[in-house]
Image (tube, rainbow, N blue to C red; front, top):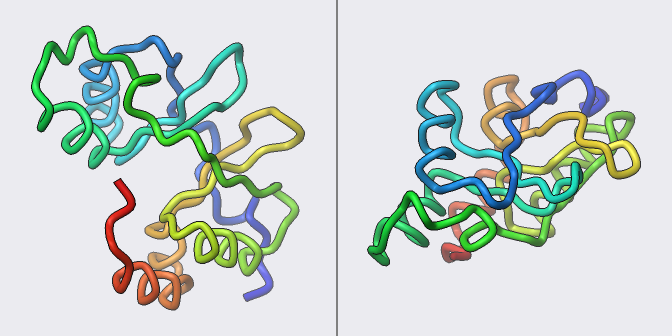
Length: 139
């Protein structure tokens, strides 16, 4: 598995301001057929929101979803890799953080995102899937 992250990442991932609503994020996920958006503050990634986050942290709790912001529900402990790192490095970051997505950054600039789905569709990452399927949900 000698490929670099740049070769497998999704470039220009959908990113939204932390003050965007959950409804706006859900619409973007539907429109772009994706499962997550990167949350930004002052043009820098500060978190990530997945479709599961919306279901578990927003919808299930009730309230006005058009007033619930991404800042309120996003996972803030972003795991990141550089585009020049190996796919093996990205896999190790996923395993060590028990996550399915890592952002790709150069310094503090968002370059892309790599998901477990990206890797498994290319025949990589099965060991991460096995490890994660044994883990308890982290939200």
